[in-house]
Image (cartoon, rainbow, N blue to C red):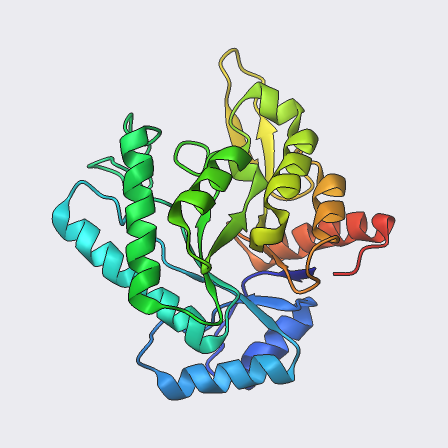
Length: 278
């Protein structure tokens, strides 16, 4: 697998981008271009990535393509199609978004309608529209696993894969996002093994986070830096090591370069114990 994360500071050209990634010890990166119309810039960064043996992990399309608001839904659909086309052009492993929410207030929910059959069918229809409009040949469209919307489990992701029925639909796995109960919290190693047993061949990219349950009467779960929670990284890295060696493991949501350095050090320490190459 390949460890990656964001780079900080101004990175205006491909050479500086590669240098910043190498300084962090990363072999995978988030897409450095956000505009499909910048053809020359896309070409230059793609060439620099290939020359430096950097895998572009993902292009984010963060929006709500199942919004109950017609205007917001249409804009999100167009954004997802554009970002999928960008991922295909630059050679990213995937374009990723969450499925979205039926909430009229928050694009990343939750809503009481999100985990219903009606919404499942709407997600299937929406994913097909995104993929069919672009017809990608090198990349895949993925939905990030989430605690309150589909796909919220290995089984619901499998069902989505079967229902969407498109070769360009694949899996983006963030096991931390699936930990939404004490049962999954204390059994997250088993959950991770189940994810890879059922979804492994479809995984295009993963996120690296961690999770910690607060000492409160009611269940309260917080996302924390890798190494500060209970996520079973031994299981996570062991399972990833069985997949395509180019599968990226991308750190996210940390506030500073220093925090990413600490997170990477923890992940590398577990990998070293397992003799796993990052």
